[in-house]
Length: 290
Length: 248
Image (cartoon, rainbow over all chains, first blue to last red; front, side, top):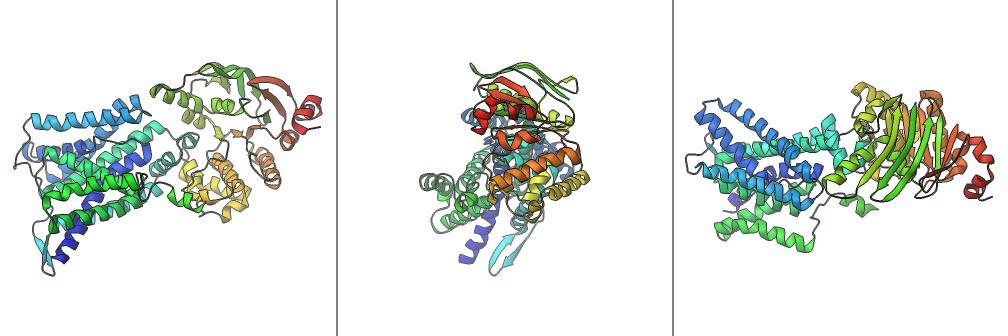
């Protein structure tokens, strides 16, 4: 029982990290809290399903198309909607949240509800660790989450666009003096974050069915991880997802499964009371040293 | 090279620059001298195009109203409405006041970020040049920029501006908050920039004493208005300048 909880807790943590990564990236760079994030996640899931089952596109191409479409969606949302209200935090949240609601509820309106909406797993089957069985899909999630974390690190530290991301995140006006266009980089960060949501959807959704409600759960989980970890901090995301991930799995296994969703909400409430900037908020290291 | 004609800048109803005209010729070091709130930084932001971006962002969030009148000509081309990144492409690069650097990146990464618009090979070449100009930076290459002293950060900030390959370098209060020794080092560096790299420099400063000896031409700014112009020597001899800036 304990070994199983630990293993599934770890997998749950990687799922949370995967879900929070894109949200955190967009916020860390452009300062925009993308509340359409859950909608992008669901949108990508349904898009892959439609491409696969209605249009008969091979799996690999469906996935690539879905990721690209999600990125385009993010890019467009930034240019068409967010730029008009940039700098007004509340308007940004309302605009993206409203848009997210519209996208998700449109799927419900067109009757995308039911158990037939599932994505294929990468590999069928499972292995046992001790006396705990774990399917290949969950292992794949853990591996992909770790690989993506590494990829994001390398991307932001060693490519031209990645360095511009870091520059805008730290000091927008100084970045402008080197010819870095803050609007374009903001839109790119939104596109990048949305593409990450699509990747998360493609990897995680095969575990269950694609449901509109899933979009709200994803948004709440992403928010919880980001708030607990400190928005914009990669280290914070990793630590917070491990904390919340294990807490959720222990709650589900030792208390009641339906209390699981409460964990992230309680975590948000507690952190906001005790340490509102999050456990690993931005530039903490510098403040503490000086 | 650069011509400013009757520039006026308003923040809401406050006049930050009033009917300001100036000219910078190729190969010159030009100084704009003035006390706090004289309009030096507004001038620098206007010349680098930052104000164009600030204006758009203020409009978007319904904030402060920024109004611009007048004309800025760079190589006889009107750049008054050109955005900052386009101006960097043309060769106008600003080093903002209070040594702006990216605190969480190390020195090398800061310099790499500054080369955003340049080719990779060119960036490495320019970084090499910066390390020759400021040998102290080479030793701090992998130090996080936020942990460095003010003087080191100022060297880095100027180095970053150089990596962006300016033909006209704008320095906003490069000597602010630095020790006299560091001030001399930076003044020498500015001189060598013109001599070795052929970069035209426009700097703004409130410390007239270290700056006046190296400038070819100076403008004295007070409350957004031009009060005096002249070559560096003329200004140094001027009794009013002496009284206001040298305390004589």
